[in-house]
Picture 1 (cartoon, rainbow, N blue to C red):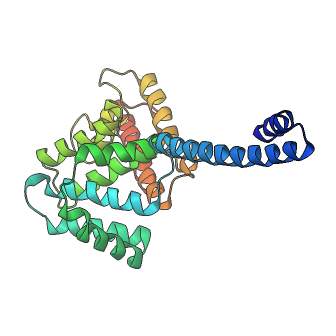
Picture 2: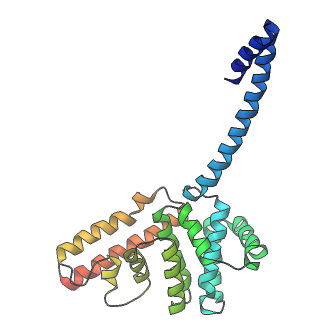
Picture 3: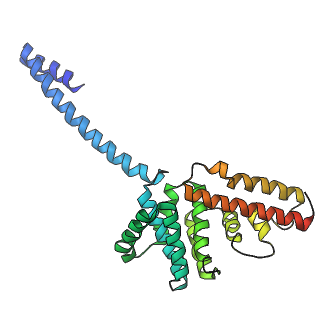
Length: 251
């Protein structure tokens, strides 16, 4: 656009053909500068606004943030439990390989561990960059850490609940996952996300809903280690349903 405006202006001012040529090239260079300027601004705007809504996050970033959340749960009681540390290391080695897991732990120790770990910042970052079902698997992993020593303390439970809040996980989903790690009379109902007053037909309907949510075939898009967590939850849902079948005597 600028080059043709320049050509016309050059011809009119100099009343010569070479004036049109000079105007054309002057307009051409102005157009190039304008295009580059707009491109830079657009790129900056795109990167600034796209990141918070993106559902893709680099593997290294995810692993470091996951390790940060794990450390919060481990330190929730004010002390570091070796059994829980071993659980986390085993999890990372099994799912990422020894070399990659060691690299993640080194980076964590060298950089992140020396800084104050902010629960809201890290949990919100993961919430912005992962799908809802992935965040459910992360909560399952965190409860697994807390339960590694055979007991989930109130402080550990509160810390995971706090993380769940920043994850924007529904309360019933949180209570369902939490119930999978406790042995209490009404846990089967909590796992299925229903009340104890639910009818047999409501229990069957809830089971179908939960089985669909956690069925491994529905979560093939998740990384392998998160699929494993989904399978464990699926088994818990099946176990809860079978328990209620026996207690109530329905098929």
